[in-house]
Every structure is written in C-alpha cells, then in structure tokens.
Image 1 (cartoon, helix red, strand yellow):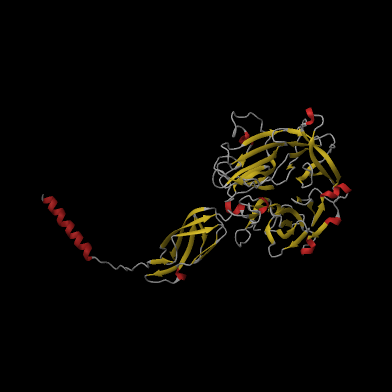
Image 2 (cartoon, one colour):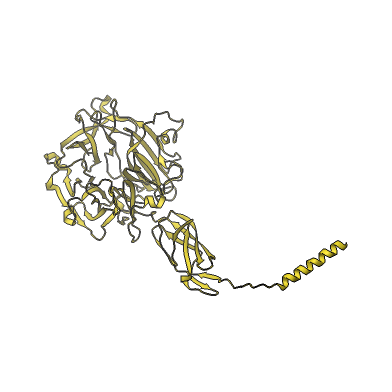
Length: 559
C-alpha cells in the first residue's frame, strides 16, 4: 500500500511540472477554405463543354495565387487551373470527380467532390468517317441533331487502344432487340471492318461490345438453330459486309416497329448470312461458309442484291424494299454466281466467262423488266460494265429454276480500280469518280454502246480550290437522295497519312437527282476532319426508307 501511495504522489508532481512548463511555442490558426460554385452533379453529352468557376473563401486569406489547383475526373487529372474549361471527350457513364486545392505555404489540401454523368452524343444521326491516319485506322464524326463541330480522329485518344491498322469499311445495322446476337443489340449495331476483322459496336454510344467485341466464325455455329451445326470456319476472316432491310413496318400487335434485316458477309472467299427480326423468338438465322457454286471457287470481296423496288405499303405500312438475289463473282472461275435465300446458283450460259477479272462493284438498278442490275468488273487497267437480269433456266426441269441472263455489256471506259460508285434509286444514273473528278453516266446508254467517258464529267476538285494532289476517295448519298457527300484526300502519295495535320475533307453538295444538279455547299463542307477517307457513311439511328416517315411527306433527314 505504501508503495502504491508513493507512485501516486510522483505522478501528481510530474503532471504539475508539465502544466507549468508552457515552453516557447508559436501557435497559429489554420486557413480554413470554403469552396462555392461547384454543383454536386453535372450532366453533359460527349463533345459538349463543361465550365466551372469555383469561388474560394478563406478564414485568413483567399488570394488565388497562394494555391495550386487540380481537377480530377474519373481518376485522372484533366486540368490544373482555377477554373475548369473542359471539352467532354470521355467514355459514357457517371464519373467521380474532385476539385483539389493545395495551399502553397502549408501543403494542406482541400477536396471538393462532385459527379459528372456523361451521356452519348452519338445516339442520333451522324456523318461518320473511317480513315487511315498516321498509319492506323481512325474514326471521325459530326452529330446532326444540333449545331456541332467535327470530332476528329478520336478513337485512340478516347479509348486508349487501336481500332486497327488497315481500315476497310463501316456499316450500320438497324434492328433493335433485347435478344442476344452478335449482329443485334438494344440500340442496333455499328460494324467496323479493319484488318479483315469485324468489330461490333453499340450504334448509339459507338462503344465496342465488351462481351463479344468481334464477330467470329464460331458465332455462326449453332447460335440460332438446333441442333448445332458442324462446319469448318477455320478460314473465317471478314472481307466485305452488306445489310438490307427486309421489312420495317408498324407493329399491329403492339408499339414500335416490326423489324427485319439481312446481314451478309464474304469471309475467306465464302458467304456467311444472318437474318434477324424483332417479331420472332429466334435470335436470328445464321448460315456459314456457303461456297461458290463452281468447283474450287473463291468469291470476290463484294456482293449486291439485284432489286431495289419499294415494298408494298399495304395496311401495315411496310417501309422496306425488295432485295432480290445476292449476286457475287467467283474470281477463280471468272463467273458470276448468286444466292437466292437458300442455295448458291449459277448464272445462265449466255453470261460470258471473265477470266482474270474481279468484281469491283455492283448494284440493283431501276431498269425493268426482271431486276436488271449492273456489275462492274476490273482486270488491271481494264473495266467492264455488265448488265444482268433475272430469268428462268431453260435447262432446268420445267424451266422453273431462277437464273441470271446477260442483257448487255460494254467497256468501262475511264472507270478504274480506284473509282467509287453510286446508283440512284428512281433514275438510271451511275455516279462514279476518277481521281479528282465526279461523273454521272446514264446506264441505259449501254444499249447504244456509249461508254463512260470525259463527256460525263460533272465537276472536279480544281473548281473548289484544290491542287493536283487531291483525289476523291469515297461517295456517300443520303437516303432521301438530297445530299451528296464526298471524301477527299489532300495527302497525295502519302497513303499512311503521316503528319499531325489531318488532310481528309468532306465536301457537301445539295443534290437534285432527276435534274443532274450538284450544288456545292461550302458552308457545310469541312476540311481537315479525318485522315485519308476510306468509308464515309451517314449513320442513321432509325431506318426510314427515303428519309420519309410513313406519311411519305415528313422528311426525317437532317444532313
């Protein structure tokens, strides 16, 4: 007990000593900051701007020069300024953000948290350009739902990965469905072909699918039918793709539209097809590795349907077009072949063998009768225009098997392997390019043995201030056929589009198809918005045949 009492007394003495020893310490208050002017939540579209002007109030001082600043958005420091002026070039979704203020003298930091919800600016109609830029594939776009600036070569910087090296083609698919399928999704697909590999994107966000980022040969095996199909898809590589609206009409049993679309691709010299519809419980009908009709054949990477007639409107208000048969060309055998929805078939014996040629391009025309279509073949410096039509095979049993007959062929004239093409819907005009010039040829002139030549030139780039190095690299016509877009390259011989300055342009023309009028619209044209344009497309969010609503009057195009 005495020992405990002694320890207690010593403790009291020590505490008293500590209390008396105030020492020579310099105490001062901390400059406490209050930040105003930052909201808890901001909502912006991709490519919109975000401006924030914070106001700082300190208990001792508020001089902005005594602090440093950082704006942290989604875990990354995007600015180090007092005010934030940010172009939203981010992926979609909600981002955690902080405004970080650091006192230069004390190093004390003040954090102000907020959130940024980024939505997609790509969910409407766009002009979309796939190009070659600095040795890689890139995309640029212009939103059409409101006044906007071009978003130039954004893909690598926004997603921190390459789209590919060699860009080939971009294609929207319109069917919107909750059913899981590589070629469909809730908002429809956007497909981008680079390096013979087909990337799958959401058409609204332009974000690549995380579950199925690429279309593969395996997707065709057993995904839509039972029992699973056995097939060899080891040579699968996408070389060309095309879609066609089968029907698009008011749903009589509910809201929205019944939608049906066909997707065809040529991969490894064979044909793959998908047929999708929203009024079916099936995810789609897939067929794979359909070989040429001819032995040891290999299909050229191009194909086209041979009918463009409007579907019957009827009581359902069908807004699609008839497709006809899908025509291709076997470059090993030098022969046309076609797919009629279930079988690969030969063309008639009156169609010549075109040894050494490849199918450069083709399209249905409005020439009648019998689904007359135009194919353009190329062999080196030679081109041929070949007109085919649907008929019966006289050697088939009862002459009931459908085939294709030769109607007419002529020399391709000045058309070359780099030419680009478009066939008008209701007049027999073929638009094509050669170098820096744009031409319009009347397809019916084939019957008079008139070939495409310099007399068919409508204009050239020199008329719009371009020098001799500039060339037209692609043609795009709006679905209403009131707008013509041309992709133009000012890179000359630089096919890799090296250098920091983009030299890919988009020229805009107001179009009068029947009157052959092409009026240059300088105000809407844009320079330096891409690398070398490979494919220029108008990415519509919703399909409307001819750009008109079902009343046939209200124009939905906003190009």
